[in-house]
Image 1: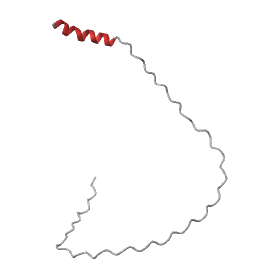
Image 2: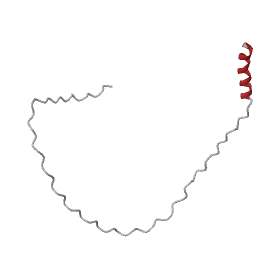
Image 3: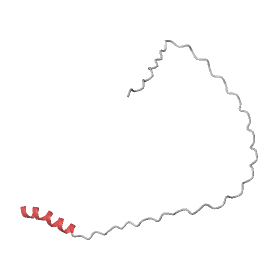
Image 4: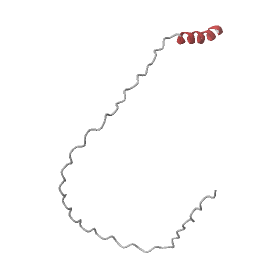
Length: 85
């Protein structure tokens, strides 16, 4: 039994290694190369002026806010100094 456990992986390796593996050949894709530029075409006609839009209606006013209850402190950090070389 011990010999079978040692010989089985050896034979399976040999049998799988002997299988014919197909060779993959990558065919290069042809690249289209543009030709020389053709002559310039005629200039098109000028388009017509678009319509002017209507003035929008004025929005409604919001409610007045209530006063604050405390003091807000805004701290701005100092600007970073330039590194010295």
